[in-house]
Image (cartoon, rainbow, N blue to C red; front, side):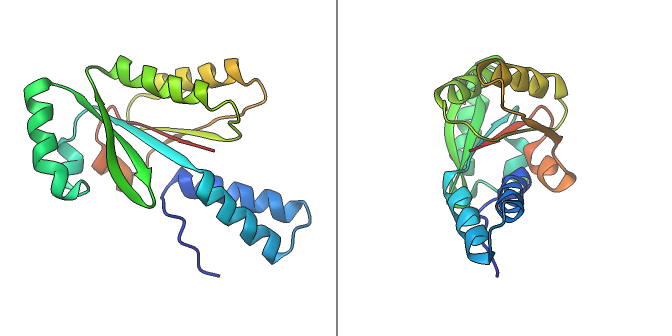
Length: 167
């Protein structure tokens, strides 16, 4: 079957892990497909970009890019993006990397039902590890996946980017 995962990278990775677990538990194709579709509907992704320069150059913000670029340059803010139904959309702006990480920490904390967490980074593994440690301090049974964004995503995210995918 062909599936529109509505995401890339560890978004697809978490879907694959869910499918593998369903199959390993003895699920037939229908069970696995149900789990895949359920997982797709439950996944959330948030990205914190140090600058929008690279995502604008890559054409990934569409019509909103000029306005967001102007706001970023005037206010010196960092953009947060969320993935909604396969589309990247601005989800907020923060004044510093620390404030952006604090927002991500708040999201992790409020997701008390958190089953899976993947944290991607371009150049800041220390920040990814700190988020992972924070998540496991709240949910000791959680095993976050830390990964470096590949070149296809990294070129759009730029240096200093953090991406979290969670279910």
